[in-house]
Image 1 (cartoon, protein in one colour):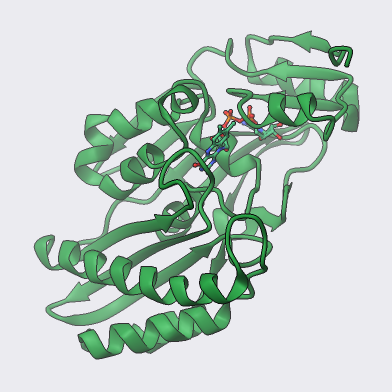
Image 2 (tube, protein in one colour; image 1 turned 180 degrees about the horizontal axis):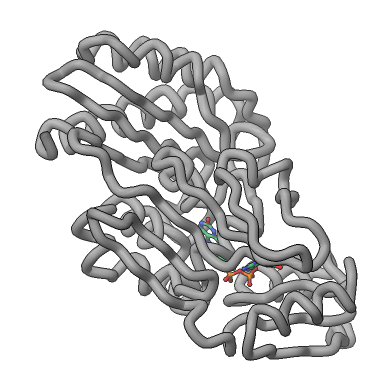
Length: 292
Ligand SMILES: Cc1cc2nc3c(=O)[nH]c(=O)nc-3n(C[C@H](O)[C@H](O)[C@H](O)COP(=O)(O)OP(=O)(O)OC[C@H]3O[C@@H](n4cnc5c(N)ncnc54)[C@H](O)[C@@H]3O)c2cc1C
């Protein structure tokens, strides 16, 4: 089979990248690590006429992580760098864990957290944790800069809220609230390397054992990573007990609409949403109690 042919541009500024995307229109694709994009081109799932590689744009790989100003992960920051970053591991440990749980070492050394989100796979391993932590995306485009909650970014499998000419420049996570805890649990057939059959990211905020806020996000069980708001409501304003955690986990499972595919059957996924939600809420609660 002949190799795919396309033009290749490596701009050195965001403005230049946006201009190239506007000029090329829908046939032009952004590339960060290329670990999703190039696979799709090789498998004849995408036929771009031009690729705009972001990796030569200075500063786009920046990561800043502290307790006061929050976390910022630039568009070309590698999964491996996020997983190993001292500030992230200290103040946003679940973000580091989710990046470290994505794929294998080779992919993590090429692929990016932002690329993982922009690929908009329902099973993207970094989405549940970041959505649970109320992350926002910075978007640059022909009309300037805008920001949107990550909750609203995913529109369907492989579809984001990005318009023609737009790129994500960074993802931002607000500073951790006192008494907050987070966790991510996932499972896949081979444990590592393959995409998750189910992933659950949680955040709880506690005052004593009283829950003042909760977010539960389930990946790979709906067309997009989804918030299970009925389950969240069951926790907010209550004392978190093991029984309540089990009931909320069951509710979270009922809110999802998984399909049967090569990774898992729908009934198995429903069951595992409940199991992983119990684990993720239990771990988030432990972290929240430590952080009070
Ligand atoms: C063997 C293998 C194993 C994998 N395992 C996992 C896994 O366990 N979990 C998991 O979640 N994923 C997995 N993946 C998928 C992939 O590696 C990740 O999604 C990775 O994080 C993608 O990052 P990237 O920088 O390579 O994205 P790219 O391939 O460069 O881009 C992905 C998509 O996002 C778009 N894009 C990238 N950056 C931007 C931007 N800044 N603005 C706008 N659009 C952008 C591209 O146009 C493309 O459509 C695996 C892939 C392979 C090949």
